[in-house]
Amino acid sequence: MKKTTTSQAALASQNDLCGAVAGAWKAVGQSFDQFCLLAGVSALSEMMESDALKLAGEAHARNADKPGHRWGTTRGRLGFQGGKVELERPRVRSKATGKEMPLPSWQEAAEVGWLDEWAMNLMLINVTTRKFGRAVRLPEAGVPSQDGSGLSKSAVSRRFKALTEARMGEWMASDLSHLDLLVIQIDGLHMTDKLLMIGAVGIDIEGHKHPLGVVEGATENAATVQALLDNLIERGLDPEACRLFIVDGAKALSKAIRRTFGADIP
Image (cartoon, rainbow, N blue to C red; front, top):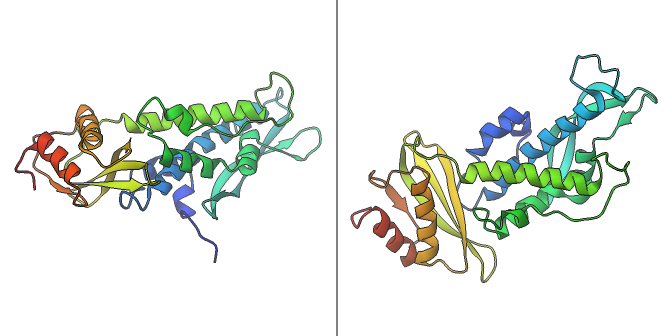
């Protein structure tokens, strides 16, 4: 049986995707790939709709100046971490030939394997710093298209990079002051022998989990953890609130937590 990385229902629409991002982490390490997937697919959905607008205009509108017309939607599959993920995409039919017109963003995503590139690079690069641009860098080369059309392979890649950078940037800078968290879990994700990412997930009174942030560090040291905690407080996490912190036993984690939130923190 082929691996399915996310449910068809979770990717039913862009609105569902945006809402699903916040709950994608079941634990710090286990579902980071799904969080990256949902963020990437959300950006790709926006790109495909933009392609359809250029080719056929708004749905249910007369667009005589466009080369195509809307032709409903269909579901397609993209490779992701050895399996397939299914999502909805718009269809456009050519007025001249009656044949389906390809959406450049979908075509490129399918050929290059964007989602795998997106998720893997995010897991290896610190998404909270100026290095983020490298996290969404995609393979180069070109798909033939008219000059200036904005539909070349490099142009489509730039659009995806810009959208995913904005989407992830918004999440990593999001306000945390409205969250009433009872538990914060902090753990290290070992990517290589020398590369570690420290992730934090909060759990509220109803048991809902909220991914809070990640930082990169060569080792699970106090400075790396302190950078993560400082970022959470800058974004509105109340340092005076009483919470339970769950860590893996590393002294660096406990040291930074007690320095930031008090020596009596459980």
